[in-house]
Amino acid sequence: MGITRKTKAVKKLLSLFEPTVSAILAVDLIAQLKEEMNKTTVYRILDRLENEGVIHSFSGSNGLKWYAKCTGCSSDKHNDIHPHFQCTSCKKVTCLPVEIKIPTVKNYTIENAAVFLVGKCSECSS
Amino acid sequence: MGITRKTKAVKKLLSLFEPTVSAILAVDLIAQLKEEMNKTTVYRILDRLENEGVIHSFSGSNGLKWYAKCTGCSSDKHNDIHPHFQCTSCKKVTCLPVEIKIPTVKNYTIENAAVFLVGKCSECSS
DNA sequence: AAGCTTAATGCAACTTTGTTGCGGTAAAAT
DNA sequence: ATTTTACCGCAACAAAGTTGCATTAAGCTT
Image (cartoon, rainbow over all chains, first blue to last red; front, side, top):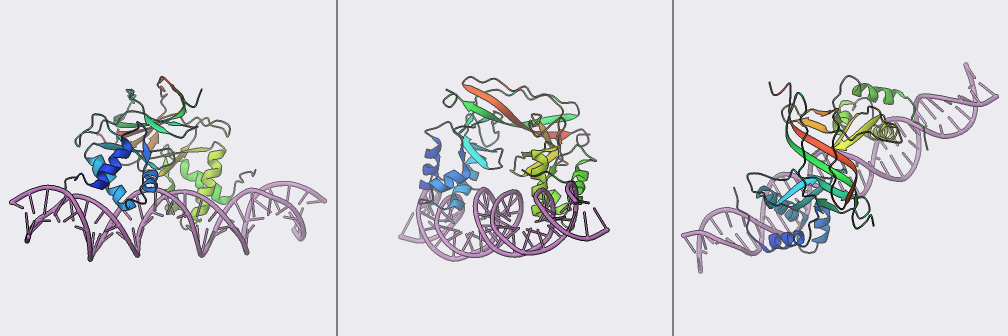
């Protein structure tokens, strides 16, 4: 199976998620870490961390992959049914700590929901 | 500016959206039309039709682009704040005619929402 | 119906994101 | 210290989508 070791690369990558509640584009991570590690390594570490419930991923409206820290996730269950919000001004994406009410729809059994919201954050709307 | 002409290619492409309420992957359209038109043409027609409010697009959880017929859209305003649903069995994606209640979140002005639901459709859950 | 104007198309080459295979490296375990 | 095995870098690849440019064909005009 494989156990994720806390290598330098893993620690470095995790540190980038620390100072912020924002999500980060996989592509941006790769650009930011270009001097320190290979893009293949970045993708593989992200995969592993996601499987362990440390981070979670989602797709933005343009199809690019975002990653963000998890709160209360494990390898068994990903607790990422919260909306993700992107500000049209600063382009930042954040996880909103809001409970999403999944609608019940006749003839459909809904098991999961991904909600991507777009608008203005408080810093940009002032 | 450019006006979309009803060429053979456009008619053919539109006909594929007629018999169904399902969304179609751009990639599948290209594969299906391989003998009749170039993939560049497919992408360009899809772009034009979306700008005119005839179809709308969204990204699936894997980042691939889906297209579906619009109901009540114009070039000015896209009325696509409805959830999209993908069945985990048959993989089909459909537009759900349900009003989504966009949550109000402190410090955020929400202007648009993309909701992607996953589960089982009625045909597959029986 | 012939000619003209311009949108639409095909093709090839390219860009970007993400993946895979494999040889080499380094972290743990013994 | 040696062995085991996870991890990493590199290069090559794959797939989705875009761009430039020459050619074709709609739709007007007359």
